[in-house]
Length: 293
Image (cartoon, rainbow, N blue to C red; front, top):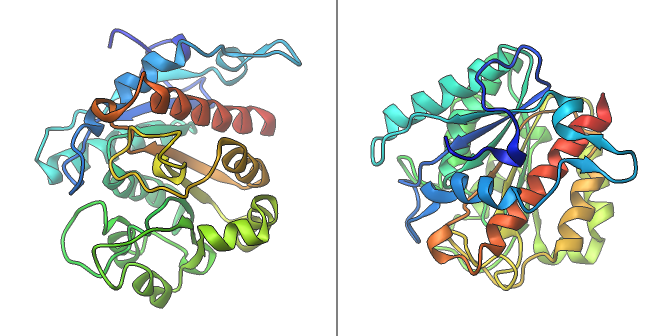
């Protein structure tokens, strides 16, 4: 690994780390744009345009969290079972050291093995899935449209405390929204989020999750395609940067045990703007973890 996130130490030893970066460079699940396997490298490089210091306190995220970059899971393009096992194993290694994984995809399918690892440690998890798509389609097999349908079937989720936020646009399946609603997920389409307000939406989600162990999945296509063009499946009408960070701020009190940011596709990006925005989202996650200390 020639570059690390925020230039944090490269290490697999998380015994003194409160948080660790984990790359999941796998994109065999997407049916749209191929290229998210290059996402972790692009996000790491973009993070060097950011700084690790909080200017209000002078505190370094690297120092305060003992932050490490654990590198990439040893995935193999096109081999789902082998790659999922590698991602799960890498995530489990961090969790077993009482470290919070902050993972980066890869496409949205990498969330499933990450959830498997987290659920083994914490039991069924509340899910906050921020995305233009439900990823819970009534289809068979493994792809980015079935991530949370499979997670539900495997008993990884506390569905009554789980939600999909930011849904919009058209879909390739008529059950794209109906199926997750039938399962029991709470759905907040983008129009409803804007009508209610992002802060109020975040507060409602926080009340639903309460103190349950929570997994936060942030798909970069939640942002409008005009500000995050380099994603696997861009959808117009998405969130602004202010809306997204207002929502994340409202979720800062949750008991989040693992995070991921996914779908950055560098071949489709414009001057690395999506990768830089993804790195900024990840810094926001790290700031949440540091604040809880």
